[in-house]
Length: 534
Image (cartoon, rainbow, N blue to C red; front, top):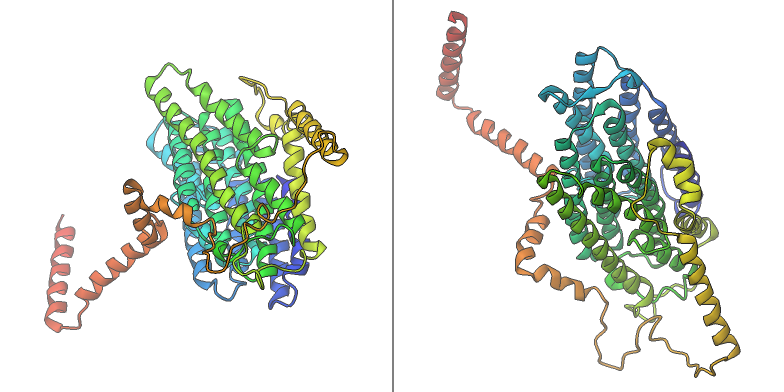
């Protein structure tokens, strides 16, 4: 965790030196980045629950300040602060219950079985704090909004990487160390994970803004982590933790790529982009690798961690309880289907941004790629995606994951090295055939595959995003999308409506008419007398 925090801090600072140049409040910005890194490390190292809570709450403050660096992000910063801060209050309540039961705040001396309602309630309170930090549903709505309006380095640093690491770290710590999980709680985690996967990826499919699309995928991928931990077996838990690390790598890379596109074109609206692969080759290559990684395509890191989570769920299918087997089968189907929809989403993103025809051939394409401080972090993260996939057993699993979980056994094995070697051999053979004309190929050049087919005068450009709009017209999904747009599934909006509704009720009672006040005074006195007489 500490190595990952330091890595993302260094890459974010390097990227920010160029992206944030000329922006206001830079002293506040860099101070908050450094303080966030320090507080994150101290939270990870804390063995005392009170210290963990202090640093955890401080991270909520720096998150608010960093999001608010953008001129139009005040509302989103407030929304984030309320959701994360509200969950922190529940975390405080859960810790208070733990102290009431055990008389200790030391994490290494606490081991509670979920055998009564009070202990279960304390676990759920702390788990909600982890869900809100990581962005699991229904505490997710701040992430897509933040992704669209906050500064790109902030989004890549916090919602995309550090917040995911810390949220899932906390969930893993309480599930593996502080509490002894039972079957019911594991099933609850699996259902939360499966629902988060499918609901968020369905929302991502219909997004037209690159950053908002990535924001919903940042939510969807949390589902795999929660699902893996919820399996309760070593391979699933290791897969969930490994996916936590992998997601931070490729999602941070994708957000930084989005920042590169925004820096050069002035927009991240997919309908207004296209054909950027020639002008921004390094950004395109890193985005392509990260997109394949998040979609679970071998031999990249995202495939390996998802494959481990699948194995954890498959192991649950061997349970003697029919209900557990049925729920596990449903979760497995949802997880695999969600991965397919993720690939469909990133096919849209890559086509609309880098491969499709530009919205405006005169002004739509930049002359060159971004400066090296902006493309270098993307390339480094893309290289990690490859290394953590090809050498998963030798490097990340052996060094970082297995020592924390232990007793991990694979149901089946997949050798990334052999697959990668065959891919490289195929590419080399293809290059030899092409370069030395072994088969005497007919070579032609065309802009169709990079930049889209050229249109004749009067023809209509197809952006690639319209195809996905038809999903919203399905009878089953149409009402769900309509309600989602109105905030029916946003816990912040519903909470706000509830609070304002209560306020309006008391405003109605507090109408300024003297006889009404006298009636309420009389009723209050009657209630007080009845209480005293009792």
